Amino acid sequence: MNKLVSLQKAIELIKDNDLVALGGNVLHRAPMAACREMARQQKKGLRLIKTAGAMDVDILCLAGCAASVDAGFISYESEFGLAANYRKAVQEGRVAGNEHACYTVISALRAGSAGIPFMPVRGLQISDLIEVNDYFTKIQDPFSGEMVTVVRALAPDVAVIHVHEADVNGNAIIHGPKFEDVLMTRAAKKVIVTAETIVPDNRFAFAKEKADVPHFLVNAVVHVPKGAFPCDCPEKYGINREAIKAFKAIKTQEELSSYLERNEATDYQGRGGGVRAW
Image (cartoon, rainbow, N blue to C red; front, side):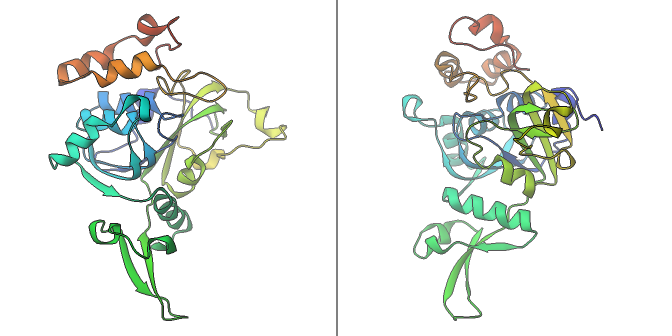
């Protein structure tokens, strides 16, 4: 079944108030083209899941799309400082910051993928997170009687990931670090894949390396070269520092609107990479 659609059509699968998992890690293979499209479509009330996020979460907070964020870490890597839009939104009460440890997000997604309501997280025996995040509680182990911390399952309505290769049916492969992307696709009800390259159907039928994400889990495939820009995509392109700094300088909704309409190819091609990834 051919699932190749435009980016606009794919993001229309995301509804207001959905629980949305974002693939990648910090500034590495984040689904930035998809996040920009969410901002353009003015999605509202999104409850975001990310183990370690940066620009993806930051732009959705600036655009007013996010209602909450379940994450272990939200900040740009040291050169670029904090995620100011996320921080401001949490401080002002516009976004609920549900703080985790990264591994508790993973544990919650594992519970979601298994269809169970929670997962034990033994490392949180002593932590303030238990008091401030409603996703944690303690229960009694029925075998030993010991009190064990558990995290509530996270079963995303939609997972959005950026991959290196996909076919039109939805089979997809990630080169280099896979982070939590594969797990997110197992836990989610719907999966949107943006891909650097669309490959022939027989790419996965005869390859030694099989698909990380099988076609039957995927609802939409979008061909988006440079779909992680200005973040990196290992083996394809690196971080575009100039573009990240330009985004971080945005202060108003008018500047954001202009940014979302801008042609990145004109602005950055030949100056550290980057083409229009829309």
